[in-house]
Image 1: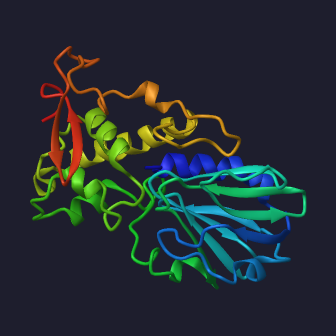
Image 2 (image 1 turned 135 degrees about the horizontal axis):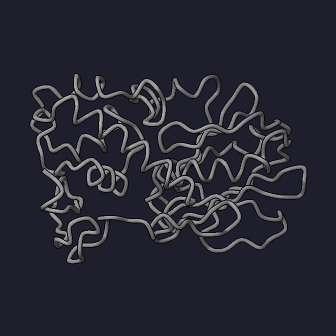
Length: 271
């Protein structure tokens, strides 16, 4: 599933092709995504100028001047800029056709993604209301994490994936950040000290920035806006490495199920 680095990489790749461009129309080949694509989308976007692209958590936000498009890539989605005349594939569900002759194309084999239209400020949409601070912003601090985990018995890995605690940190980067911080993924969040949270916050930021620099992780169907893959999976320290040797201590990487997701960890380095 595309996580924060993949969505941010997509935003960075799309920005020079979209910002300042005018939309001619939308072509919707399949309205049945995670939430129905608006039937009137072609008329809603026609003639609008794309002012800017931004990101909130794992959502890509497109400012259409007084109204916004919200894209979510779901489990297998990707957004690419292609010549508008390019024949669509079976999983190419939505195009935004631009005045430049190019099109922003949503490819989503599993159809868990979304294309939503929001008049006014996007932060008022129910999907974006109540989200925690962004992990790369100054509001996300050790104090924030420490205060919101007091008395919590839930494993820290589960809380890192809770958008009301910190938004956008998915399974891959929670595993990698906890390893870098030396914290066992099963440790109760309420039993972690503020100094350890300070290290964890730093490692979350370092992990996400490294992933963005590497273009994200290409697992399953994720590709950049130009169709190229990301390479951060080549830098994984624990994720997907069950049974392999730890790069720090040579112990065997193990895995455990936490909240229906696999958690990878080093039993020696993480406590």
